[in-house]
Length: 225
Image 1 (cartoon, one colour):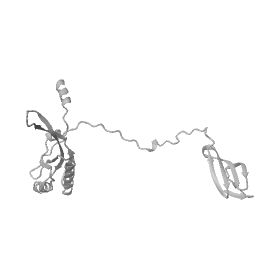
Image 2: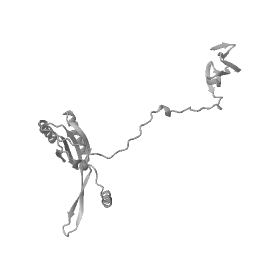
Image 3: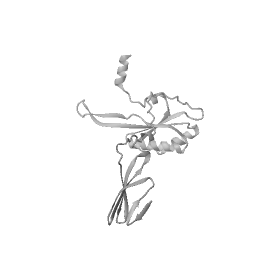
Image 4: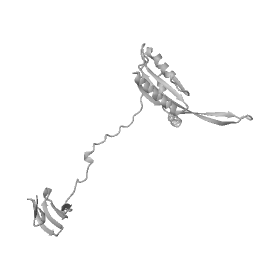
């Protein structure tokens, strides 16, 4: 509650006790103490400058314990520990029925990585629009082939160029025998120049071909055996 008496504004409250008042023609300072939370004493001052009141606070109980102030970790949910990756197991292969194919691999091979990637994305979206189930879409290990050239005179060969082959695979399943011809015709008619297309049934060898060979590890295993 604020009341004005004799040109001086004084803050009054039932639980406050005024300590001192400094007045002036354009400045009035009222300092008082009040009973805070948990019995702590706080010191506040109200300053009147040119008809306005400016409140400022200062903490006078620095000796009090402040345990827990600023802690926020209890508000954050605990993250689940990451699961360790186990060994990759071969899933059972669907061989299909008399009326539909099992698991088919659509291989797209090109020397340009961007071209192979973009057309693999097109085939994936086409399967989604035609309600053909896509098991997964992945990239095969990049293959590099060196082209050697024989000199006009002599038997020594030198490196002419290096060809890098990029391959993408779109694995589909549940393709009916009647719709397979239509699907393959659409894919082949939109095949861009420089991309080679091949479709074959998925086998266990195709699954193992996704992983890069490690000859050093194989040699060590052979020595142990």
